[in-house]
Length: 237
Image 1 (tube, helix red, strand yellow):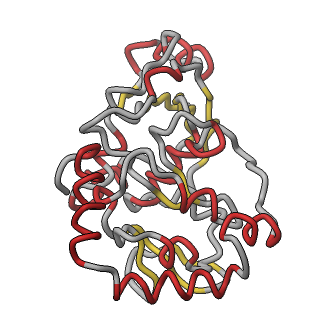
Image 2 (cartoon, helix red, strand yellow):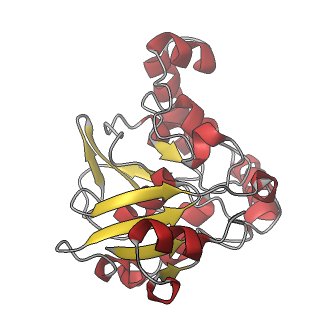
């Protein structure tokens, strides 16, 4: 087997010797374990940072990381066919305190393709156009169409509203401190239509349609104010 250790970024602080843990599980010497650091930022690079070449369908892998679900989603974003990867995903303990929101640290929102139905709730709700719906290369195809992350660095750190509204819990923020939102939990609870109605304060589809309409009507100065608040957390996209 092939051993790989993946970290999501500087704030992904593992609490164990990851190389040793993966080497033991894969039954290979530690020096044979491959290490990939900064996955979240690397997945945004042109061509997915070359991550598609990381896995060979003919091989079996042991992949050690803090939040396997988030890692798989980011790899899929980078063009890796995670469904075809034969891997044991080894969840390693990590320091949650390091995930507290901090200025200048992007959240790197990503869609879990194993859960997304393409309903478009995220695209309708987000004021910063992080998501887009409609046919497009590289989009996540779900039962209701296609949705993709088009501007991950436009996301406002500390705002998980779209993830809370997603009926399938398909949206992930790898650097959020909440286990249900950062990929730490493999099977988060799906949200019922009643929960969505309560979160939106009424009929979900009507409220989302109204929010979509307002995105085109929102006062430019109000939007600039919201954008400045966003940039204070993540820096200009």
